Image (cartoon, rainbow, N blue to C red):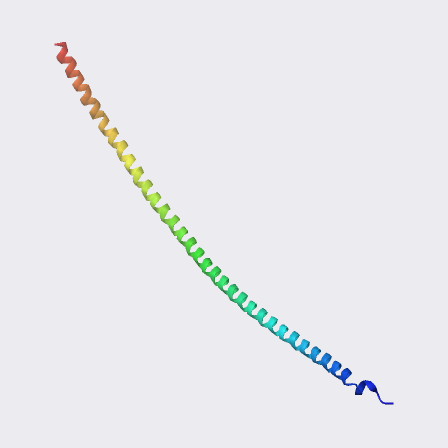
Length: 125
């Protein structure tokens, strides 16, 4: 007896359609996987680029921070030098003023007393 399924064209066409559908579905899945891989690769390349940009910015900021720290140290050193210089000048000025007042005060007192004595002597006569 012959197998009727082998000779039945409808069964053969259904089987071929199933195989073709499976093949097309497999091809579509392969294409989707390929596009997903491409998209993931693009996203990773974009992320790598962004990470590289951020790392370069961080290194730039680190160098700027280092430069600022050096500038701050230099400014502190200059400030302390200027502060010491100004304090020495101020102290010297204060000492000069004090010495001047100590030297001038007796002369002023003697002049004022002599004027008072002269006025008193003039009004007593």
